[in-house]
Amino acid sequence: MILQVNSNDSAAMNLALNNATNVTQYYKDLGEHVKVEVITFGPGLHMLRNDTSPVKARIEEMALSTPEVSFKACGNTQEKMQKAENKDIPIVPQAQVVKSGVVRVMELQEQGWAYVKP
Image 1 (tube, one colour):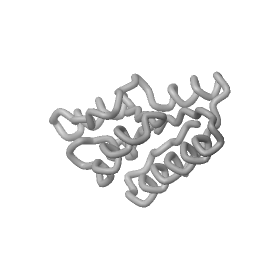
Image 2 (cartoon, helix red, strand yellow):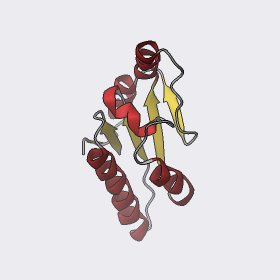
Image 3 (tube, helix red, strand yellow):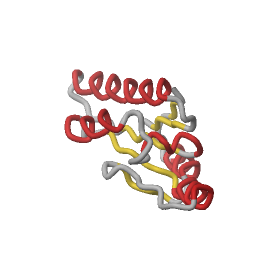
């Protein structure tokens, strides 16, 4: 499942994390495997910024307790923020930077992944 986060809204970020937790627990209870990828871009990149994330502690905890959930940060957005803020934009160590968050969503959808925008 793809969870898209593209707003700098802590309620939306927490909702995405709740969705990820609920989906993984649902499939765990069935004895089935599921993969969830939280993909951030635009203002949603703040979710995975090491310096501004309002949900950093939850991401750290989920990375340890829920390995089925992975986090992707849009490299295009990171570059634009670096230029706008004239500084490096650090990403939480639990996340991986991809070239384009939108393209990542498209690629996973082409592979049959379900798409959810909390």
